[in-house]
Structure formats: C-alpha cells, structure tokens
Image 1: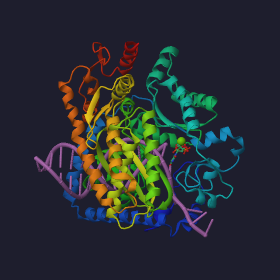
Image 2 (image 1 turned 135 degrees about the vertical axis):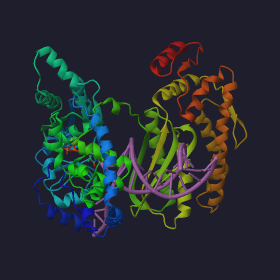
Image 3 (image 1 turned 30 degrees about the vertical axis):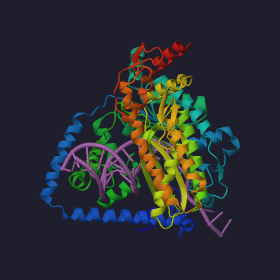
Image 4 (image 1 turned 180 degrees about the vertical axis):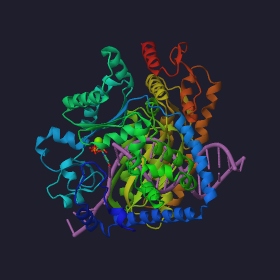
Length: 575
DNA sequence: GGGGTTACGACGA
DNA sequence: TTCCATCGTCGTAACCCC
Ligand SMILES: Cc1cn([C@H]2C[C@H](O)[C@@H](COP(=O)(O)OP(=O)(O)OP(=O)(O)O)O2)c(=O)[nH]c1=O
Ligand SMILES: [Mg+2]
C-alpha cells in the first residue's frame, strides 16, 4: 500500500472520466521513482499509514455500550443541527471551467485545439480539458505532463489577465446579488433568494432558478467568452458540490427538500466534499466510511475516534447542512501575506542571503502597495529532502520595512543552520502576520504622510546612543538596525565570529523591545505628540478607540471605522 | 488545569 | 540528463508559564 496511494492520480477531477488510469499511473510512477520528491512522499504516506493503524487499533478497543453512549451523544448534536436546517435560500456556486487555461485559449486561439496547460515547466497550475484526457492536471510538474502528452503546450501564468477577467465576471454576479462572495479568482457564491423574490413580485409567477442561472452563465459567456459551471442548492456546501457535477459548462440543482438532499448525499463519496482531502479520505476509508451516509451510520464510532470539530463537520455533511448566510464569509480579512520561491537546492550562505534579501524586498513592496503592516515574521525553508520547517518570531512593533524583515530572517536562519549539520535548501519563504486592520492602516498612512513636514518625535538609539528624530517607529527601527550593521561590520560572513555577532544582534533586537514600549509615555505627552498614539495601538491589536481626533487640527473627531472620512478631513485640514 | 505561543500538516485554488 | 509551485486559512499537538 505504501507507495500506491502517493503516486496515483485523482480521477475525481472533471474532464478525466474514462481515461486509461492504469497507463497514466505507470508513466507517473516511472517518472517519479527514486526522486527526492518521491522519497518524501513515501515518508508522509508512512506517517499516514501509522495514523491509520493507530486509529484502527483504537477502534478495535471500543465496546458496544461505549459506542451506544457515543451514538446517543451524537444524536443530540444531530437534533441541534437539524433544528436550524434552513431550506429557504437559493445559494448558487459558480466555478469557471479550466479558468487560467480558458483565458489563455481565448487570447490565443491557436491553443484552442491543442492540449495545453498553464504554469511553469516546474509545475502546472491547470490544464485544458483536451490535456486532461491525457491525465495532465493541476499540481503536476511540467516534465510529467510532457511524458503523458508530448504535444502539450505549456503557457506561463498571466495573473493580471485572470484578475481582470475575474472582475468582469464579478460585475455580472453583482447584477444578481450585491453581496456575492468570491472564494478565489474563479469561483464565488451568490444568494439568489432576493433576486428570485423580486422577479416573482414583478412577474406574478414563480421564476425557474435553472433559467435564471442559465441566463447568468450566458451573460458570463457573452462578457468573457468563457464558460462556467453552476451548482444550485440551499446552502454553500450543496451548491459547491453541484457546480462540479456537470462540469464543464453545465449546472446542477439539489432541490430544496430534506429527503431529496439526503438522497443526493447518500451514495456520494466523502472526497467530493470540500474540506475532505486525500488524508481525511484515507483515514475515514480505513474505518469503513466511504460515502456521506456512512458518516451518519458510523457516527458513534467516529465521535470516539475524531475530534469534536471534525465530528461536527462530519455530521453537517451527513445531514446535507451548510452555510446559508454569505455574510459569514464576507467579514473575513486577510490574516497574513507571504512570498516564497523555489530554486536549485543550495547550501551557499551568500546565495541564501541574497535570495532572502530579494524575498524581503518583494514582500515589503507588496505590503506597502496594500498598506499593510505586520508584527509577526515567519521564515520558511524547504530542504532538498522536501522536509519543510518554519520559524516564527514576534517583532516589537508593526512594520513593512524590508531591512527589518531581512535581519529577522537572518537571525532565524542562523539559529537553524547552527542546529542542523546539513542545510541544503530548495525553497525559501517569508511571511508577515498579525497584520494591522484596514482602518488602522489608513490612519497610519495618512498620518505618516502629513508628518513628513516635521520630525517631532525622538528617541535615543540603543546602539549609537545618539538622539534620533523620526516620524514613524519603523523609521527609527530602521536606524537602529543600520547601527547594528555598522557595529558588526560587514565581516560577519567570512570571519568565523558568527556566534558572537549572532548573540549581539539578538541582544540588541531584544533590547529594542522595551524601547518601543516606552511610547507608553505618549499618554503623558502633549497633544502634538498624541499624533503617534496610533503606533502603540497597533502593538496591542485590541480594539481600543471608537473615536479618533484629527491629528492636524486636533479638534475634529470621527468614528474610527470611517477612515475614508478621516482621510478626507485631513486632506482639507492640510490645505 | 487553563491560556498563550510555536510548529506542522491538511486543504483548496 | 534532470525535473514536483505558490499563497492563504485552519486545526492540532506540544510546550511553556503560571
Ligand atoms: C487546483 C489548482 C488551481 N489553480 C488555479 C488554476 C485554475 O485555473 C484556478 C481555478 O482552480 P479550479 O477551479 O480548481 O480548476 P479549473 O478552473 O482550472 O478547472 P475546473 O474546470 O475543474 O474548475 O486556480 C492553481 O494554481 N493550483 C491548483 O492546484
Ligand atoms: Mg474552476
């Protein structure tokens, strides 16, 4: 069993029905065997197999009374869930067909009659339906794609085009539901309940959902020349399953009726449900759960083997329940931002440092464009064995300054290198999290902007001990870090005093922590210094203020969430 | 024992 | 001949500090 699961492809994807799976798997196995990637895959499969063994060992110890009690407990959960079943919404899920590939084919008709894929030589992001018949699919490296299909054309990604096309599609979505909700560039949910009600009001007769969705898909096609598929159901889970049923260029309705839903769910393999992936499928299969109805039948056993959260999810699936309020999705704000890159594996320090520098600069640019500041930094390394490690640290303040990120990255990296005896990386990545909220950010940007005229704040640099005037904390931090570099000289890489420099860097970074906390004295500052109260606020990341005062006139106040008004006012104040 | 932090893995597009 | 991505979210487990 060990290797077969790891390499066999998933024919669950649309467009891959009736293909010669055996042959394809043989080709893939041939191409993968013995590679580091393959070895790593086998290692993870071994871990999964161990988990499966443990699960089944535990399962065999369960007594029948215990199972009965567990089942009763689950029945209570089920009746709670059942009591809030809501069949009143018409939720639809729209998913573009072979999205990236379709865009590329539209823009270059020569590709239309050829098997093609989008991505790099290293990895394919998706393929057109023609290529899928050869077994070429998303998440496959280019060279295997070529093995499966020698005529395969590989087109590089053009994210700007996909974003622009997505915007056009969204324009159509908004004609039907203003609060539609995109889950990615190529798929989104709409709640047509209101639209259908309004239609009925106007026409005096019940509109046909299928007709409306057909019309919507036609509009999408007319505007973009791209086809999409739709699922219609009374919650997002069902709608999502539906959009895959008649792909490509099709739609599918799950009627808003409990019995119909249960019938639809009954023989559905659990893997069709979004959230159940390769591993969970294997785990569940191993304890005899294959279809969604098995989840219900074996609920007692499952509740003793899986976590509460998992069981809750399993029961929702088994009952055909799901989210009926798209606003629950819409509140989500970005929580992290990152960039990473794969390269020819190396242990060369200078090379690694150079890559890190580029990554940090790119991340910094990205954050500046999006007006984001982060307080938590994570370094990610994938070794040449494909083992991945991440190291996280809290910064003393929010920043998007690339040199601060680079310094932090180097400190984290040093620590790892000194621990491991061999360190050969094939990927490096940097991520910032604990991000500032949008409103806070906008405040910060505006305030930074108008403060450029006068450098009012100052602090003593812990390194050079000079009084440094600054506008923003990150600027001050920048100075401190420059000082650290100067102190250490540029010799750190050649002279083997690495451990020394490392320690001193760490110490200084630590010392700078209370330094910034000293902004607590803002509380006893004059009104002019209060300008910078936004900075300590972002340390805490708790919601504190509801009202902000204009930092220019110091009189005008506004609700904190109305950052646009604040900006407008400040603009006028500055004139 | 909570409650926070960190690392890792699963998942999806 | 070689060759397997990138970005974001969430759940869990292990650890620490009370
Ligand atoms: C699955 C997957 C998709 N993508 C990108 C490319 C896809 O065009 C886009 C949408 O993903 P999907 O909707 O999963 O795939 P698709 O639209 O290409 O094909 P389908 O007809 O089956 O819906 O996301 C990746 O970059 N990596 C991946 O692993
Ligand atoms: Mg799609």
